[in-house]
Length: 495
Image (cartoon, rainbow, N blue to C red; front, side, top):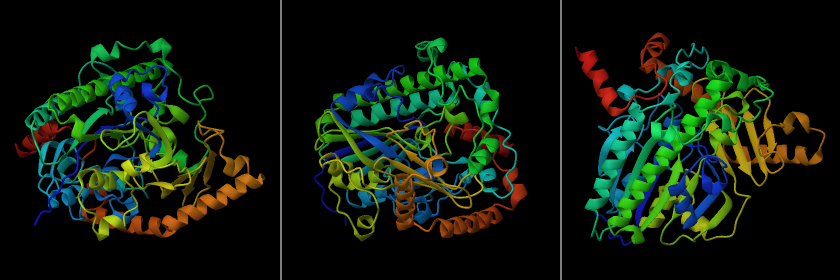
């Protein structure tokens, strides 16, 4: 029997591939995000927010479950969330809250009980499988789609921008119907921009001048990655070799244009919420699932633990949140689960209380605590071993099973250009930070044991899908097709 709840409404807006620095409200000198800036002005910016994994599918499974990737076993882009583990959405629904998703989910299927009352325009992984070639980490195949990233750069519409417009219109309609509602509700609105293809609608592409684009971090040196495992990832996702300076500048224009396009979609959603009369009783949280390197350090898209990839934008506003505050306490997308329960008034159960997340409302009303440990991990395509990151105070420690670590002082070196695990080993402060980073990591997990479990699970998954050859010939794509495109694929295969 559902409990009686008397909390606030919750509107989570999540974009895809929006790097944390690409907003006017955090000081970006070029990109224009007036709607996100306005949201931040009446709420809270969480300055040190991170993804549980710099890849879409495992991150979205972790968001649903509120737990680390290695705890839930959704390691990669071919092991999507299937509704088996209880999601916070199901906990809200069981608690009497209507929970609606609109847009991208990247779970296995709408046929699963993912916890929502309804799913509107859902995008799930292709064929209930996802990106199977990424499972072949011991014998990485050639990633033949890498050239598409540069080929798609330009002005115009794409299936993704069309999909975002449909998501925005569906959300406006949903919110209009909420006018006068007295029962708390929750909505998970998931846009796909500024995720590639880097094709921005003309009006947004034309907002930016290629000659005025900021250069990627480390662009002048143009050195290939020195770290042994980062070399493996760069060799697999070899996007950078397709970008000369002219194409790079156009790509930045398109990315900023897509970011402004996404910001406009957010503005339309927030305007519809205001018109519905529900705004004063609704907490709004804006996040992205991960960032995008955009040429920094020679990388494009995500997969690595640099802040441009593993960091995420995070803004919250509404009843119970302070106005105009910037919070330096580390936060994670895992905090969304605890926030959802807190905002809607649904009681925690034993399982949810054991999860690592903390309500963003609680964090925003507390003194800053930069000593909180934030954790991220990567076990997906292009990697030959598990990657584990911990972030605390001024430090970031990245541990690669079987490879040298990385250690960065984020205050002194925000661009992460100096790996102190190599360049500062004689400094006692550095040695102490290295030791502390490994201690914090091992409080969360045993990386060697997790890595072994992951490869065992992935071997089993490869066998389930019919072996390595079947994985190679499964679904090969650079970005997940939209629901309309997936339907066309199904119809084509049935002919």
